[in-house]
Image 1: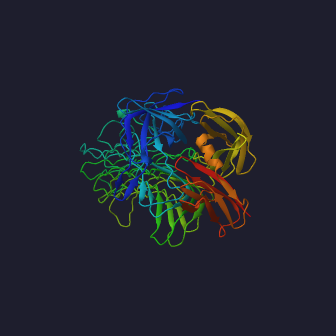
Image 2: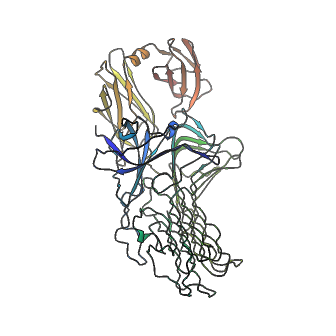
Length: 627
């Protein structure tokens, strides 16, 4: 089996923070070296945090290319500065599983080894940023929120992403909110005025802090000469130039609006405009397999301390669940990745609005009640207004992107990707001179029936020893997007997986095969899953040993099939019996069951049910059929 080890920087964060009623459940780390298939990791200090934010053996992570070297030769001081040359790996992501976390003698993490080679190619050069994010499974199998969930704000190295999986039903009683958690807005300029009324529209790239700072985008800036002036930097909005021009809005699915014109003592302001250019639209690159945080808005140019910073872009939400529902009565639940609006400017240049981020919702069933509706939003932020004569309002932020794995839900659900409005260039009412808004038309960034890199869930995957020393391996998938399976086996450890059987897709959910080579050593199995779109994924690793086998042989389920009820003959070591449907939703739980336990499923529909028989040492999984 090929192994991957990911190299981190010394910058490493494991987060579980509750601030202003919002909880961060993910951990993050920056990947700084990525050479071939064997990599080394720099010394890291890992703090003690709850399991959802910790990188541990067997846990899942998301690896995501946040920024990449996409600017090419578009670095001249002209209007083409900051255009996209090639998208490279920017925005690509996938789920991986950790097989080992290695620490040095001081307990610091020095390497993370994954169970398989990554599907995508990622980059860690000077102008690229690659991070990993913990991808916890919440609930067992259902999960109900107890607080608003958010992401750590992006800091240029890590953060910006809220990601989790729920094997059963996700009941939302709180918001999922990554508003303003994406790429950072540019700062306003220093106070500067050269004493003339001459506007400066022709400076696009500069290191001068007398000009507004550019917003951040999918290119990692390392050159000081790229930080200021009105040229955009990919989807980051450009800063306002002299005199008092506004910053451009950040872009994502659609482009950001251009910053307001600037001041020259006339009623119409600078002509041509000195406003920052809006961040580019990434619509041609976006898919469910490649998503971006919203670009930051550019900062305004000032000389009277009245300018404002650009707004941050929205972050990224990745959620996978069998069902999403609301209950009871509420004022509304938000799933949002909105860009930030820039604040009101005085008699200087205003900041541009941040672009909306990205939301991926791989949810099979969507059950939202009218007394507790949901709004799913990835909107651009508004540009700043000016409260004096004609200066420069901020450009509006561009739309984000929202992906559903089913048809867009409409029952008690509202979905929006709106552009941010451009700010007013003066204090007129109604406004008679306005900076451009983000790109439209509204709601262009909504997609449904999307296939995402979040893996197709195995409803179950387990192995059972039979009396004839054969091992039955059984699994089921939630939907059929698979070309074939390969069953892999490793004896004694998880480092030597070999393919023992290839199973073509049969356009069904349930599969079973037999391993005829039983061994007394602990045996590990996993599935290599080939998808029809060319992707390859691995299942979790399951194990079977003699203890599992003897535990299995102590149980009889009868009658099977059944009509209303059945019985489980079990031993004294059983601590609990759980009944699930094929979606992993828990229907019953019986703690400390009797050795002859009755299970009544009369009120449930006909079909197949999964029985989990749990002891301290292991869990046995059986199937029963109701007629």
